[in-house]
Length: 379
Image (cartoon, rainbow, N blue to C red; front, side, top):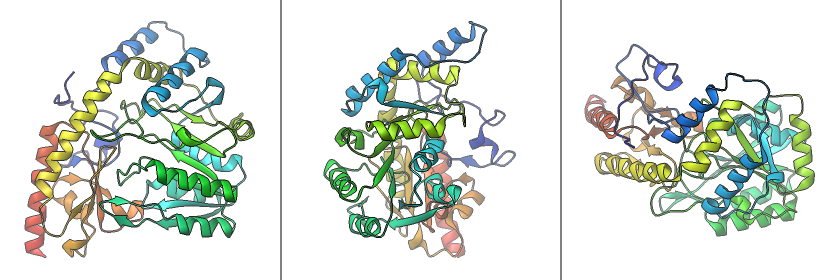
């Protein structure tokens, strides 16, 4: 397997590449990878296509058992097939989880992945953004503010673990403190852990479900979409150990959305059953790509890099440049399409997706360095 292969996505149906169609802009924004999916997944899909019938499908117990084994071996999470609830994707799962418990007042960390910020607006309820302090190059949980909000009536907290866009892996003591807080105040915790397998070398994922028991109001959202580049074949799971919470979530889903796509299920099963070696090589390559970013941008005055522990997303603080213009707009003019920090609740930041061949990344970094030099001089 090679992550150096250049795959032309410009004339495909790629959201990532069509955004700048016709322009000389390298898209390093939305979180999908410019790498081919594992060969084992491709073979499984081809085999399923040869069956020729695509009627209603059902997720087998063996598929759920494969996921449970993966969670135990990779995340140290004990789960049973009966505790898994199938979802169309993680983002709808965030909304359905809050709706299932009839929450009218929810919180989330900021900055954070935009769809998490949007849940309250989608459901027409109150949303509270908790700004995270940055210490030692990683975000910290604002536990005091969360507890105060819970005392004021907040009913649920949306968590992103590992954190997007910061790349912070929440540590076990932090999660234990959050879980204890939730128990004291009957707070629902919904943990988006879609990046839980994209762990950079030297780190390990700590899942909230590793600590939660059957009495805890915890919903953990899981998908192969990010780790194996299968976002276009969406399927996800909610791991819900509490029986009543699981019953209510299933009731909310009933009759409202499709929760089984036969090709997505085949791809997911093949990924979790056979593709751990591919994932190990991927995370090693991503670590090398992060090193390229650190080497090229780390010493430039006016910008600050957060050290990611997970994900393939570099979170770059450009506020020190003193630019009046949004940095993402400047970089786009120089031929690099990045995510704008304002979308995450952090103006002056940009997010760079480094899940691409080194050749593409180096070209993008050349353009960014030129922008940082020329635009600074121009400004």
